[in-house]
Image (cartoon, rainbow, N blue to C red; front, side, top):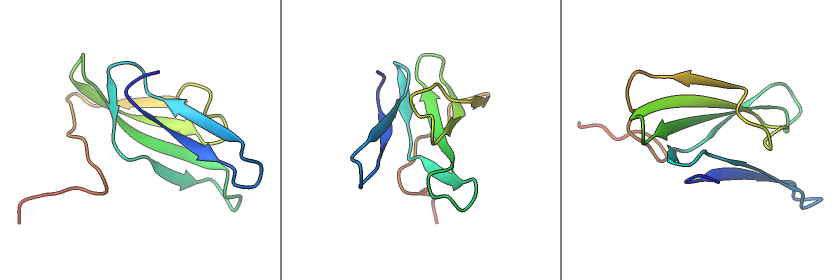
Length: 91
């Protein structure tokens, strides 16, 4: 288990699925992208910062297979500052 993660809880069955970041990786707020009309099908986009290598990547996680590793990682050349509920910039 790393420095964070997120969970999906089925409120009817109480079944919980979790995804954890690798050690030394920090997370910003995840974003769900629906695949279709089924509210459970889609992908979770997770901006992640590898604090050891000082790089960031966007992890793409299948929302129905959260116990598996990300299906893709899109790496950036540098660390992207972590955000929480948006981005704050100078006016």
